[in-house]
Length: 510
RNA sequence: GGUCCGUUCAUCUAAGGGUUAGGAUUCAAGAUUUUCAUUCUUGCCAUAGGGGUUCGAAUCCCCUACGGACUACCA
Image (tube, rainbow, N blue to C red; front, side, top):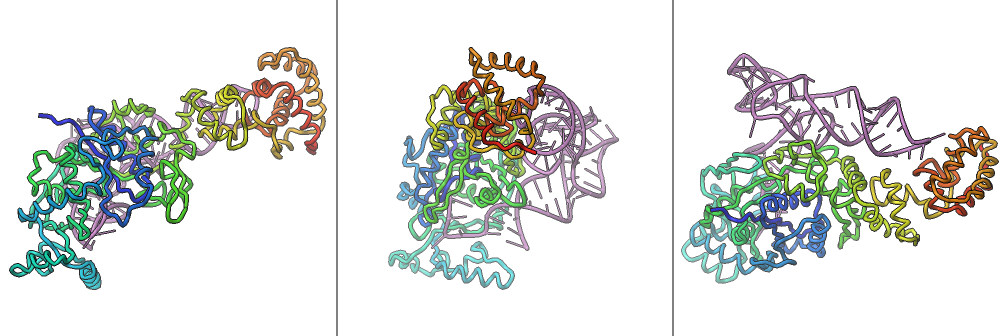
């Protein structure tokens, strides 16, 4: 009997998704789609103190931008709605009760202050306090309270939590689809809180209950969850759900490009690359963090780059569309070790995608940049310019740097190039060329180039000097595509005007 | 501190006991582009260390070192 593959991406709406989270979502998505399964989005907002307005919308918009399609979620709905844990609140207490009734959990009345005191006390003695088999009998809970004291406390509404009663000396063995066989001894685990005094479940309870209810078959999450896998397995057993328990896979972490540790929000700001898919404005501080989308990255290139962080197809192919990724993906080709994030390779990927996109697609993306510069030109012109300069760009917005001169006359001239090219006699030659250009009958790149070459050859001028000087006049420096293409596009009048302007304004280099 | 996970060029990684340890990015050099970028060619660069097992180890085992995660009424 094989169940339909169902996976979930379950972020907490405490802020923007960072690229590690996007990758987790992506791997879940690829895994599910490879097998024709479902990808669900579940919002884990059981901690109302950490709720950040806008985070949930951000998560959905980010997945949309990446091309990760959600089958069931808070926005999409589905047979297991609601998909927001805060809206499922009423569900969880009965499951906590079930565990208490079966002896797998108990009430605890210790206050946070008491526990803090125990912890700091233990620390000062060089030890660590844990709420577990050995300490719980000395603490304030339903296991130690005499007679019906517990009932009395509950009836009086004293704040309390529900804790999991971790069994003694049980070896929990499991197979992680990425890491293979792993095992833990329950003696190392503590009596985790399952249900908080505010009436909300903790992650541990909610995630197990929801994964079960939502018929999740595979849990694919970050490596930081590996230590809590035994607890989750024990919970499935306590509920009697072990038969349909999902398979677990723990993805390796994404590390900082330099130094140590996992990638965090700060790294992007300091090292000069985005760590978020979309720009994010912190509602508290107002600080804005840059995003891949706003920095001019293409979503498919971004996804391609992420897909190869920790996974490889086993072939030498490295350019993949989403469809190809779905086709090629499998968990057993996911590595075990953390991957250091390389912003340089991200740029390279973006360039690969830039040159693969059609000129019209790129032009559409570039138009907003143009408008921000106050440039309004026919779309056809934008398409043509993009086609000419995209090879030399890594990002869409670089089209401006590489081709602004198609839209406006250069405002200044590169001093280095001036001193190298604008020597004695050059302005005179340029003036002659301007005059010559005005006599041409047809104005198109090839039909300028031909007579132009003759004109220069006859005069025995140095071709390199002429071309580079002309380039300086037209673009203001030493860059850009073919000079005759530029002439054709900006037009005869503009070409001549720019030459005359340069002759008039650039002082001759000594 | 404890538990768990990990370790191949600078970076992402391939090689499921037998290869000159392969590819990609970065970097460097050359070619091409009468500029720049692209592109092409070439080059530099790795099995953390030590023990085993084996005819043979990057690959299996152990130890050490290093790195990381977790250790909340956060997820």
